[in-house]
Length: 185
Image (cartoon, rainbow, N blue to C red):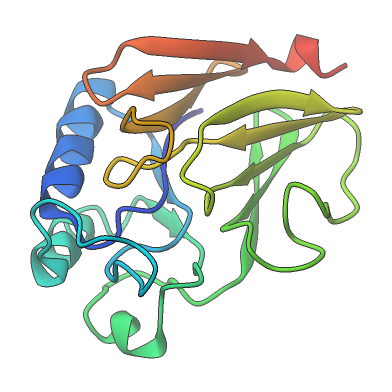
């Protein structure tokens, strides 16, 4: 199973095009989107290349491969232009025998500092903070891909899951960090 994981595009066509380049290069089985796809939000600056309709068109090109969750800046009206579901606060998927709990990460009981009950050896994968994270909390792996458009740690990024290992990567594909399941057990 190979997953490309992105969060917090915030309507930046430049960021969506960079992710499109990574999808082409990485050839993932699924694309995981962790919310805040089209709107930049009132507290964020306008991202470079702000064009929510173009972002929707880019993302809709992968509609059959996307698993998406709703972020705090996503609204019901966004679903009118997205051709894949993006209404759920979380999703659960299995990868190589491990549970991945996908969330934007902004809701109580569904955030990295307030985890839902998860079995040991699972991963909590979330965005929201715009800061990359790859660490262990007890027996659960915490993964945050950062943001390709408005990174608060100054490095636009995404994550990749392949063959039991999570990678944090820059938009040119350079590996910043990696961690596998064996680090969780």
